[in-house]
Image (cartoon, rainbow, N blue to C red; front, side, top):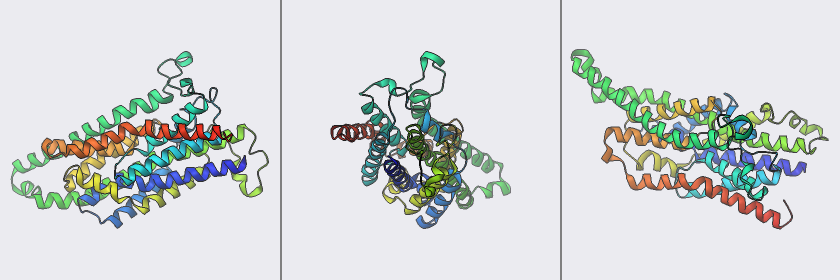
Length: 373
């Protein structure tokens, strides 16, 4: 059993590494597309800020570890978690290969749902939609409030906030231009590009920080879930000395420090490895970006991610930055958006949870048929 727990932890860290290079584009696509930084410089910035963000809070990790699956209905074994992780990993690799910016967050959630459904013999009660019986529909737990509502509202918020920020910036520029004199000279295109090339360094760092705060925590939650399940089953009662760090509460009440450190470092390493196919899609194919556009999109997206993290909501980094870029492009010129590319991205969003969930469901059923689950 201990060996299986270690395998789960290693699989979770593999997912975290893949999440890092899969979602690198979320942090740096715009700053590369606007030519403010070279790809190499942007990756260093993203990896550093990802690492910092990963240490800032654990609310999202607690949602993943204890807020999605009802342990009274389904026995959350190591096999369930491995199937969930493999479902997410396989879907992430498929979408990375196709250059589609799909959500690693939703792939992980889909994998968890699919594996839990299979282990509970397709009992929907294994997923805590809201615990309506005891706490009412406002309990803020489970898929409904922690996943479904943010999944719908965060892309819309990204689009609207992207529109609002770029519109506000253009209104300020227009008013300064009308003022004449020195103020008008300050808002010439050359000076605007120069200013926002510097400002985008801040917004790209903010985006990297937000990405780390959201996405690193999701794997922390998975590892905490595995440790807590193993402790509940007694698998960690007689740990060897070199594994004694695994014995704290494992995430029932808090996320252990070693889990936070491991996930933060692995995500930073994954981010540093890059993900050029998705960078090309986000940064170049949807709409042409100038530094002011990149600043607006990154600021809008990062604000949504940080706000959601404060409430423990595992919001998709990919969704928020993609729709923020769409919002900025729409505000500039609705006809400039490349609808064919956007359509492919939207389909990837729609398919992510059921696809990752379906893969995890099939994997668990296969293990069960072999007598391994």
